[in-house]
Length: 281
Image 1 (cartoon, one colour):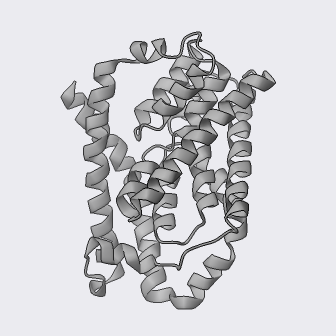
Image 2 (cartoon, helix red, strand yellow; image 1 turned 120 degrees about the vertical axis):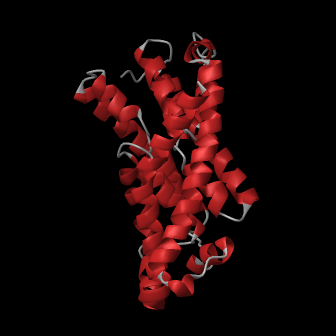
């Protein structure tokens, strides 16, 4: 089981490499080549960020959530944009449903609900916070990792990518072992015929920074163990390894915990509303 967990973690982490490398390369370019004018352009374009973040999040896998975490840590996007991306991210849900021959109408309905919640929450957070950004600090990531950026953006981007890749792979391997030990059947017993408890627990499981959580939630729903609301709660709260990267690259750990709590709260609320409205997928 341990060998399988390590191999699965390695394969999942490999899939993130292109996203990680391109993100760090772009951030290094902004810092060392594009200059202040380009940074101000990105800053001024942030009002519609939650819309962009929520649309990008619906793509399979969790690559864009890792991108969003790095961009937020660099103070390039707003909190609302980050939250919208996390909420719309479904990780392995889409490929699993396609492989199980779930109808396109049901899949689109689930994605529409997730995007709608992500949009509302993202714009609400930016509105309530006045769309504030702290001073943009793309260079703070470079300082945090103590790299030698003067040696070129490619070398620096590779340095950041390798460091985060190893971090994700190690944590994911540990989580895979724990989840494998618990078992999906035992996870399912936490949700069965338990209104509200299902949403609360599914969101908690969904926040596990590992693709196994989205796999378990999707399979449990398809097997009739989870209600539609509990499934939505778990998928809304799940952002793949996005949260894992956020805690690694964003220095303010108290802020990270607040984002974690906000993500959980919106996820649970979204599932409760789905059940209250009687939405069936």
